[in-house]
Image 1 (cartoon, rainbow, N blue to C red):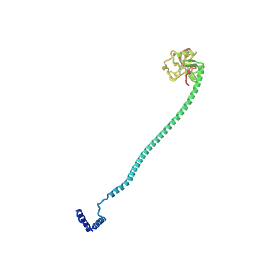
Image 2: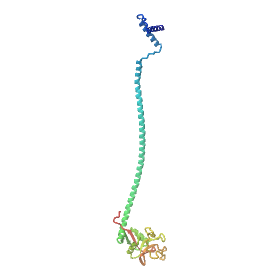
Image 3: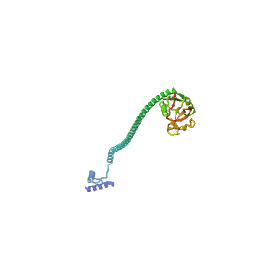
Image 4: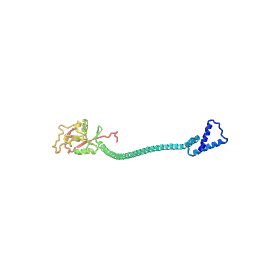
Length: 291
């Protein structure tokens, strides 16, 4: 067969050189067939072929291109899905944080409301207690007012105060308690005008609200005001002398206006156990007084 191929090559070489050698009629067809046959035989024997079909290459490329689009779309969908999952995760975390924050605020608000309710309940109890005290004070005030008005009907008014005297003679302590029972107190002398007014209302010695029973020579009014702080005194000469010759071992620790000799415009110390009438004092109720 190789001899045939070489023979064919010689024939082609003669043709390529422009040889005008003619082949016998019918020989050219047989030679062509033999050449193709030899070529096919070599290809079947595994010899590489240098011939590439352009149409086949284009078709392979065009056939592989459609297979890439599903892969691209799948990748895009996966990316979108991943982004969506990340976004959902972020939203979930934010919502969870907000939920935890709201729960904490709700707990704090519940604690605050409970505290407010407790305080409100305590305030209501205190208010009820104050109302009870207020009613009791009004009742006591009304009782005292009725007593004072009754006594002051027989007393005398001066600078917004009512002055009245007891009808019975009592010790100094009994006199103090008597004035208290009337909603008043033993008279306190603040100045010369008040001294002169009280003097004008009495006709004999009277207990006043001054004593040194607690501390000797430290005279105090019944409102606990020190006499030394008022700079107002109307002692008789050499008074107070704390004389113990009257039979009281404690001496003379209570003050009165006047003595058994009169002298009603002056003060004298006397035994607190002596019995005298007293002068009580109380502030009058004003028309603009708000209950």
